[in-house]
Image (cartoon, rainbow, N blue to C red; front, side, top):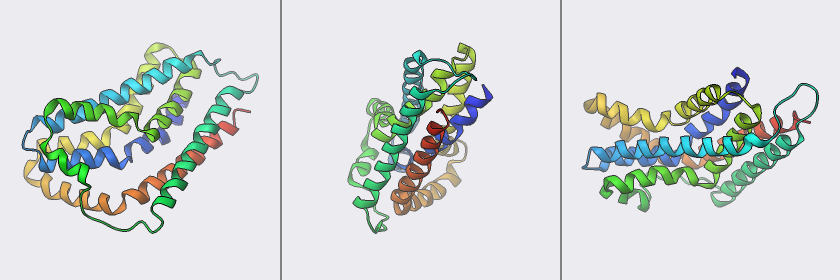
Length: 222
């Protein structure tokens, strides 16, 4: 199980560094007049992360278990495909934002979040787990968990660790705002402005690094 958790750690960090859900929860915390809305967004995001990771882990459980007697070409090929897809995503982002122009203005779609009600916020949290990069990372996590053929209890622990790390950057701001509302607002506003300036750079670097790591993992299967 520890080997599986070790392989999941870089993927979980990549999920945690996804700027879109972080920015969404920051906007909700700063702009929403309904205190329940940010909480439901976090619940939806974490629940979606659990569901999509579990589904891919269950589906990929059909791949033969890890053995010490031979290669694992199916897992290796799939991991290489996912890694290449993440590198392509990074290249596309570079071409779309060649100079990564700095901007501290909130995108139009995020400005509308302040008027969002409870149920749509829950749905948005769920929906952010089906973005292309999120799906690629969930498949990569499933390729680590499923073929390992762990007992169900250990699968649950591995998924819990992955979700805890991956969802931490969305849940932590909401928890901070709940515990220390007086100090949270300036800190959240400062974090939001920093992310608005650097979100493209973060996305490119994370996709390139994690894509390379996944390709390396795939090559070791042969």
